[in-house]
Image 1 (spheres, protein in one colour):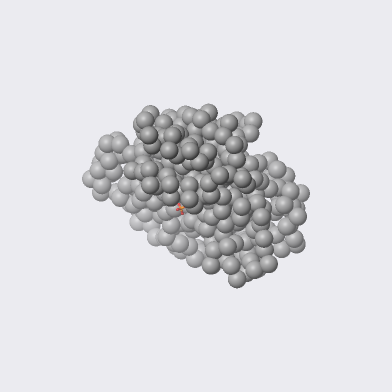
Image 2: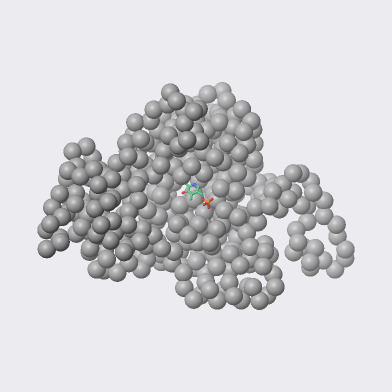
Length: 383
Ligand SMILES: *Cc1c(COP(=O)(O)O)cnc(C)c1O
């Protein structure tokens, strides 16, 4: 059975976790600080702040951006549901924007149409690792005096116009869930270029505490902390950070290997009729967190049959990215909303296996099986 994804973890990560456990410092401490410094240096951001996952990163970003109850925040519906949920956590309303059919990313033209006097921010997603058009959204934010927040959950190692994701805006949120390109088990990171944001993030992720554990531990004179506002416990552990440091060292190599597999898919599928491959425009570099293919109208096999046939051959696949507005949690407030492009992409896209290392013969088998199925000629492969 070929899996859809696998984290790339080695003895190095296991050893780093082991060593950290034996230091006795296991939650947010020196390893978290080291991981943050290295992640900031890698992305080109001024600061990075580690948190428990990307969903908590997005929640804190909403608070820091000053989003309140009754405000509206634009985001794509075609995204993992955590994107919309983060807006809900602060009592605001997600306003779902249409995506572009070739990149799966939010459409700046539709976004501008949906801006009202209540709009306070745009939450742009770099979908499955493909950067969105950050400049277009930044321009909108300047024009309407609203905030830009990046859901970069899938985009560690991707870049836009020659600069890595994390270095473009004041708020970008990353995930280290095992389904993303590098992992800490669970984990998240926020990057920012603003001193005030950085200071407040540190407070909010740790109960609003004015002095952190490490400072108290190392103090030569007694110090007492104050809790200056209502905060949260969104800390990352040092065990996770130790794993993250090792993963980060491999990130460029991982992205390179993933791009080779994506290139092999592209080369093999580019002339197949009725399918649309991921589009990486000039100046956009994807880490290929996922490889999603859209089946056009007229394709001889429908998406669900294709998934079942692949499974019968021992190949896992997943349906396309979900639309949040059609999930039960959002259905009732979105009854009159239709997003034809997003809905079509969810219903007719398929995600193929992509992880490293993938064996030559596995890649070949996926390519041959998929190509035969979309041409309705599976018998050619099986004999
Ligand atoms: C995975 C993902 C998230 C959530 O990340 P967690 O670290 O699991 O909280 C949020 N947004 C998008 C677009 C994602 O793909």
